[in-house]
Length: 212
Image (cartoon, rainbow, N blue to C red):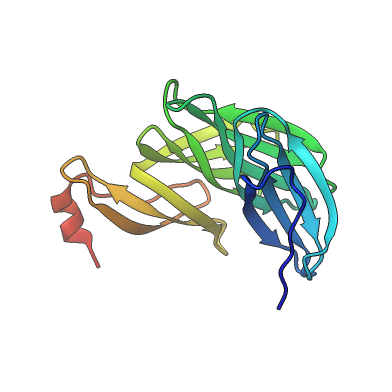
């Protein structure tokens, strides 16, 4: 029905995450791909016409992946800070309703490849972050100021996305991996509001017993 183009400085970047307001307006993140990489937050109307854009980071290596709207109509973004080919940290930024940055934080395992794949606001105004840290999937809970409250390792593998459920828990997607082989196994996990979930298989044999 329509297509719109946006005037980022380079064609090497692009829109990396998106969500839609009940009104139909669209909020997106974008990266221009030119060092120092600028990260943009852009809001359009329901027809894709640009309403405003803000540069929320001009630090080399910041890549946004996930975006959520907060209860006060601000925005929270997760992604990573790319220090080198072998080291990244999870990167989180929260803004107000017009895209002005309120705070940022980073976390991860030293000398490893850490990426924030999904972020959503919790019912207590904190945040759940689904992250890849090292070779493992982690669920991290932050408070409203970005301080870490707890983190739980889910399994070896690659995280996907997550959604809140009506009981304040989460549905989490991703792929499990095992040291015995290189195969990947899609999964869904249901957690409670504290991120608790049933024990996951530790081996291929255990997985075979639990497959649907």
